[in-house]
Length: 324
Image (cartoon, rainbow, N blue to C red; front, top):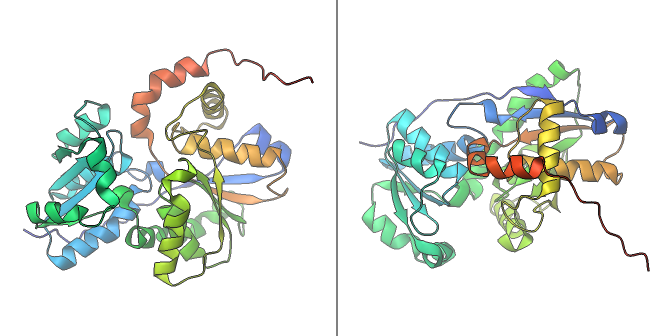
């Protein structure tokens, strides 16, 4: 039975972010709470998946197959959507079989899992990688890791449409740009397409530059036939993907206490810390109004919860400076 054409248009509220360092700098931030669109199909993942589901319906596919790690927010949303809307899903996972909260959910949601090892997962970018999986699952529509690519980016253009009617709720008549974490750059590229040069999009890299976000964004924009402009990428990876240190942990817990909005250590926490650093260095003009996209990822926080509390309540050591 082919995938049904799913008509679900979740909405995310826009909420003010009240933090002392923003008020001192004279900068206003509104948070587009994609983490609140659904209890399971959370964050930016649905918006990247939606056009793939539409393509699957047009092609008469029965379900979707995609890739990710054992903590993948993308696979979690895909598996949850499969359960919610009654279509089969298959996940190709990085590494050797292991149990994590995310993997348990994938299994509970009915996703069929294949562990590729690390070498097998690295081969995902090689020509012909999908051939064997297309033969094995001929009735499933393949989706790139993280829902990346132009198809996923096109699904994120709707975020601007979701934002505009809510500006008045913050007393805003306009805004000066976007700020969000970038893992594949797909959501960022979608916002660049939506803005068409009207406002800049700032992407705080949650992964090191070696992960190739910059060329991925360039490729998406080139495929869309638009100029490679209108955005800025900043390194917020802190030395590695999912790297959690004491400074980040302290910042996340303090920001949650003061601002009341939950953050995850892999994406949104790093993005907000990168914004604070830019503000501290004068990189954001006074009287700016920025839209911070909460891209979700809170389900993945479960694995890091203990480490976050441990580091967040540890005493921060002062930075040693060379006196020579």
